[in-house]
Image 1 (cartoon, rainbow, N blue to C red):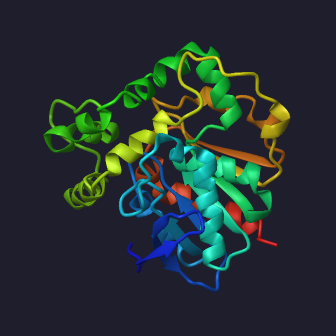
Image 2: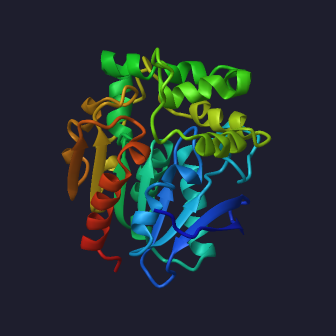
Length: 300
């Protein structure tokens, strides 16, 4: 299934020129779809056709990725600043509040947006992106999650962006494919056309450096006990659905434990056969869950 997608650049009050994909009807409820690393708007390409009938889809390249602006300083990639981009994007589009669905780093931004600007988020849909308080605690004290997140330490090192792009983006492909099977097969969703589209986004000047800056700017890293955090500042009343691929090797299901203590209105849907790339692996299941959640919580 395909859907018409239009593209534009939006000048934000934060100083960022943001590249945005749009689909669906402007008369429908607005739904922001936020990608993670190392993706861009097309992370949602398999899901968008399944949501476009019911929502006004707004799918930005987050700052640093693909064709959006790429600030030079690491500090420009903190989640709070990127959440401010999204508030500015809604302002620029004349949208008071929107539903938000997000994956990976987009999820980190979405949690931050909902916590800091609850009036701008109708309902929240999170796909394999940990709640910030629980993630900080796990990185500081859960051995299994520390081991699973060790790649973050490598991505923070100078030059990681060059290594990822070397040999025609070989390491980046391994983010998606893992250890290649002996017979050379790849997931059905990793088509030659998709690889070409991703390679174009990855090789935009400065894009990979900016993408790795998300990790350099992260306030918490594996093995580092964070400064004491006040749990009360991380509690959320926004209706929230979490869809979690349980085969995720980087973000373990343990990150769901205790989430009900931080989210007042919470639903969790576990996908036992999906991994971190659930948007590509099970787009129909993800879209069905998100559509139901957002339609049950209309924007007021």
